[in-house]
Length: 421
Image (cartoon, rainbow, N blue to C red; front, side, top):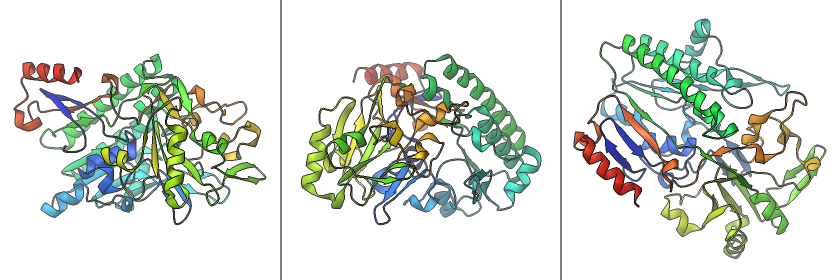
């Protein structure tokens, strides 16, 4: 995995240092293209399309990834090699032979009906006959739990049985939820590991029945969630400095993209700051604002972004990186009574940034509390501590680097050197 992460190998496992930004869409694009954001253009879990003055979080189609992915490379080698892609982000419209990923129907009354984009197109209808609709409300938000992962496992097995694709890429999201709500060391997070382990067991057993030979398994953690005890509000800082502007509407204060000299699209433990016309003087002014701001570990300018292979035209003019135990919230209002209506709802489409507070829906008031301090786990910052490093597992020990590092003593020496860096 050149340029993506560092592997420290022993037997059938390796310590995997996640790339930065250590968030879902960027890491998945890294894994499936073998490239970095500088090349594939996925610079976060969302994009700010400057020409349209529009933020798009999570929902972009596959053409946002500007480099060929694994299934494209396999097709280039041999069109007979088939691939299935189950639930990674930005997979709608990809070149894989079999696809299933959420694509809810947005109704005129503002509600959503469950649906998935599939290839073949009729596949989702066929899957619902036995498995029911994908439990979208259990995929993210206050009801997020193992039900969504269980549906993904069941339908992946069914697809393997029917089509037997040569390569199967599956995203199992379950470990995200409890760790962000309660912290990665909480009882709820530990229970989530137990629940995911059971589903992985079903997946392995199901695939072994579906194929005549045991599949080669590779299991990778995209990132590791760390405990957080503080939150930073970049947009409030920019507003206090007179750089961020809002528009007063009936339902509260909305971000004014056109007239703001600078604003931040936040994403877990980092944010892209977009400066009007990319004015160099203003970029320097904003950088000074955050240079010693509590919770901010680094302020990346063009040179700093290049260090992390994040220097792409889609990136902000600056990138703010959090301390490992802090994260960033998108809020810009200084009075909760002036927050836009969508701030209190589960709404990934209008919020100009990621909002884990959606996990804390209040059933009595039927709203989201505007208290970012409720969040106890986050990710996204560069991995500098051991507790930010994940794993890459394989069902065939010795496969990494042709088996030359399979010896456990060698692995221990590498690990020792790694931990002393």
